[in-house]
Image 1 (cartoon, rainbow, N blue to C red):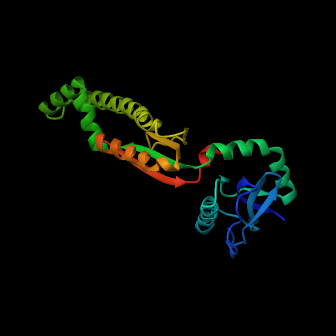
Image 2 (tube, rainbow, N blue to C red; image 1 turned 45 degrees about the vertical axis):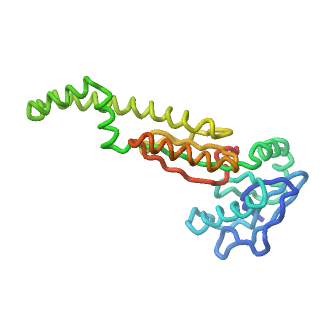
Length: 238
């Protein structure tokens, strides 16, 4: 029987409440599979598993419920094993590694921070900080907008300055929050963000971390900061 795997915990981790539902339609009953010093939170895998909203939410809900009882290594949506024997073999083979990660993640949660620029604000900031660009803008304005070549030259230099500011602000965000986290994991790059970082934060320092984000937001009004968390520490599990 194909087995859907939500996460891995120590064998001492409490069972989930009875009738906990997982992925599938109807939801497959969630249970625990204990082997050695580890256990896996599992259910029967649906025959056709697709990333539908209902199943994505169910996956997250199971991990959130399990995480309330103790530390769980979360697996990504869609993690399946051909059968329970294969799964227990993996638990045996990787036991020391999983136990090390469980110890490292004890009492911690993930916060993802994405940063982007508020366009008008960053343009104003770049012009304020760059006398040469400001002089070019003022000269073009005085000349009724400037010639085509002048506009192109100004646009290129402005774009380069903004790109440099993106790199500078990406370093700034990391430096401002670095001291609040136990580990940092870079997320996938995207044209929509100047930085995408996940922070592993002790739960008893969550308020301090969020306060540091808010301080950065207030001090750097040209930055748009999006925070997601606390969430299971996906970014810190292989």
